[in-house]
Amino acid sequence: MKRNMGTADKFIRILLALIVGVLYYTNVINGTVAIVLGVLAVAFLLTSFISFCPLYLPFGINTNKK
Image 1 (spheres, rainbow, N blue to C red):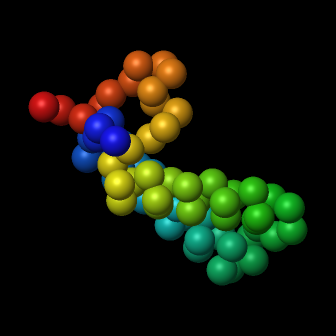
Image 2 (tube, rainbow, N blue to C red):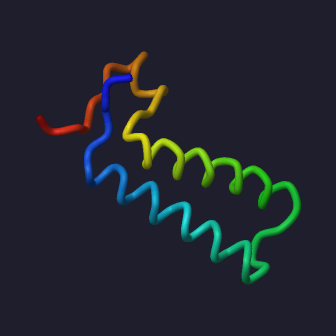
């Protein structure tokens, strides 16, 4: 896997995942919305840590500065 995510992209994804976590912890979101956003937050964290987003490939997006 070739890295295709830059620092700013990773920071934004981690920040969004943390926001979803806080909203869930404070019971602002619950039910189906919480599950969907939770799965999305986990995907954001996972892709941030490996610096690779599979959805970027078909669109040719690369935010990684060389």
